[in-house]
Length: 115
Image (cartoon, rainbow, N blue to C red; front, side, top):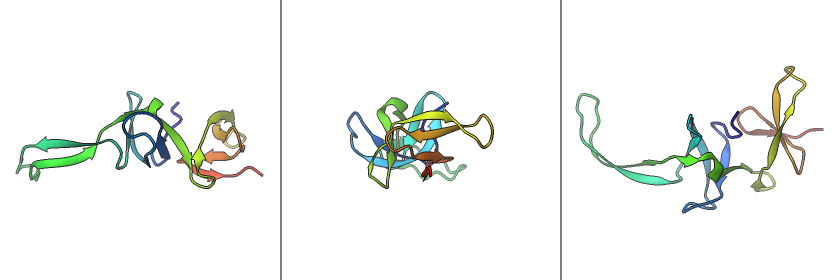
C-alpha cells in the first residue's frame, strides 16, 4: 500500500528539486510518482502526422522515487508523518492518521480532523 496517492499535495525532500511542492499526477507501479511542474525535462520528439504530434522540444515531468517526496499539509503548512490505523467505516479499512496532530487523511489527500 502506497502512502502517496494521485491528487495528494507533496513536497520534495531530497535532490535537485528539494523544497518544491506540487500535486501528484500519477503513481507509477515501480514506486515512482509524477509531480506537477517538478523535475521537468526536455524531450525531443519527432513529428508524427498520423497521431497529430507536431514535434519539437517538449517539456514534461520526469518521475521521482516515492522516498524523495513527502505529503504536505496545507493548513499548518508542514509535512505530514502518518501511520495507517484500522478504520471503523468501512470495517477493516485503513485510515491515514497524522502522528503529531492526529488529523485524519481521507481518500485523495483531503484533510478531515478527528473530533
